[in-house]
Image (cartoon, rainbow, N blue to C red; front, side, top):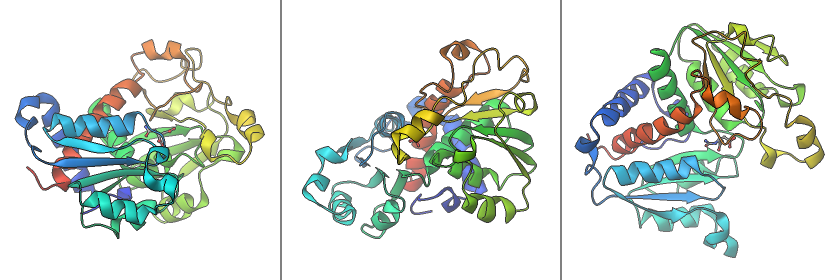
Length: 304
Ligand code: NCD
C-alpha cells in the first residue's frame, strides 16, 4: 500500500498488523517516541475537522516527527484559485507524507497523481473515510476481542455518512457479520454499497427505520450524525436531524455487552446521559484513533 485512498487499499492482514502495532504503541510509548525524527507530516484540510486532523498531528508528534498544514481552505491558496493538484505538488516538496480532507469526492485520487509522497485520504465528501474505519476496527477489536461474528446496527445518516460507507466496505471482508441499517427512508445506505459491497459478497442485511425495535439484537451500535453540510435544503435537514436520539431509556433492552460507537462529532443523536453508561465507547474510540494513526504513519513511511 503506497497510498490510502479507500479502505480497500489495505488488506485484512495489514489491518491486523496495524491493530497489533497500535496495541504495542499504547503499551510502550517510549519505544516509539523518536521513530519519525526528521520526518514531516502535512495535514491539508480543505474541510473542517477536530479529531481527524488533531489525531494525525498528535500521532506524528508522538512519533517525534513534525507537522505542517492548514485547517481550512480559506487559509490556503485555494482562495486564490489554486487547484488541488498544484497544492499537493508543492506540499509534496515540503513534507514526507500527506493527510488530506476535501469536500469533493475523488479529490485524493487527483492528489495521488500529483506527488510521489504517500497520500492518506482523511475524508472526501460523502464518499470514504478509511482512517476513521481503522479507528473503528481497532475499537471493535480491542473492546470486543474480535472482528467477526456479531450483529452491528448502523444508525442515522447512512446516505451521506462517509464513515459508514468505509466501515461497511471493510467489514464485508470479515465472517458472519449481520448488518442492521437503521435510518429514515431519505437517508438509507447508497445503492452502490448495497450492490458492489453487500450483494456482491452475498452478505445479508436488514433495513429498518426502527431503532428501539432493533436495539436488543445488537452487539455493536454505530451511531452517526446527520451530515448537515451535504444537504441541499435546510428544511430537509431540520426535518431529519433529530429522528434518532439514543438515551438511557432506549438502552434498557440492549445487551449488557453492547458497545456504542460514534465517529464524533455528536450533535443530538446521543443524549449526554449515555456517556456514563459503561457501554459508551465513543470517547475511547477517538483516543484509539491517535494510536492507529501512529501505526499507519510508521507503515506508510516504512519505519518498523
Ligand atoms: C466524521 C467525518 O468527518 O466524516 N468525523 C470524523 O472524522 N471523526 C463524522 C462526521 O463528521 O459526522
